Image 1 (tube, helix red, strand yellow):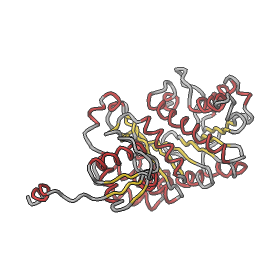
Image 2 (image 1 turned 45 degrees about the vertical axis):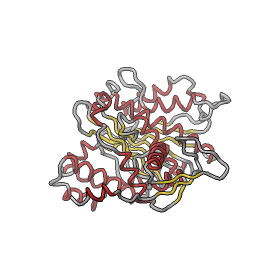
Image 3 (image 1 turned 135 degrees about the vertical axis):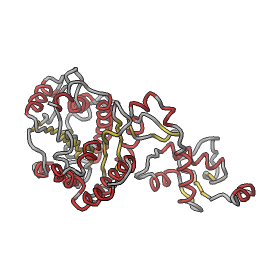
Length: 386
């Protein structure tokens, strides 16, 4: 009943989630089709029906519409012959609805691989059934109602092969309430791993709500690294009626390029930013009151980190970006801005190749940046005595 009510009307959070997924799929498929001769696979393990009751398209329909209609500069269809899609849901009502919706999509029969729709309970056995796609690049979307069926082993299996990324729904609100609930212990243990789950239960017993959330998200990220996730990016959603976290959309990959693309997408979908540094969250409150979320100075934090970490080193902007940005919120333009501000503060020098002129306020791609920790002024030294 609750699941049916969820699909009554598409809320803004669901739109943001779908936007992130569709944008990433488009970028991922564009790269993969140029690097693999195998069919690409999009796999949604908890697909839901085809449409919300208000007529809005669900994520599967959005993805299929992109596959059918995406063209290049020559007006050629780029995905119709390259992508196979597999959808699954435990609800037969949802899968039957999805089948009907797929059948009604305009030009659906132009696809080389007609979409598959399955009605199965999700477990690690599902991955075993996909072995016929073993050498194909795959993008997995795992969006369960709650957390039943979501496990660390499942996520690890989705990213083990080349070209495979995973985006999954992490229901923070329910997981927070379920950590110490004996009736769902099995599911929580499957998500974090038994040892980590037990340690987490003990660790957060006296934590404040904020520190509890930070610890839970930190531990799921650590668990994902244990199963091969080298690059992990959480995007937070706030409750529509309260300033509380409801859930996260978490991206997991083994490649920096995927992480970089997803970070740019999530940055664009963030409802607020501090000094140009995206919040990586969608909050109904911050969307209408961005000023209240702008009191911190994250760019100053980045500047200080760069000077400390790369003191007396000389690197290009891209070398700095690739070495420093993984698992941090800063996008490439933040690094450009930080470096230019550090230059104006005499905390780094920027040199270009001999014979090349540098435009004021610009940072050429191959410019060499040398960082140096500034000596404290006489006034700063005097102030430090008090």
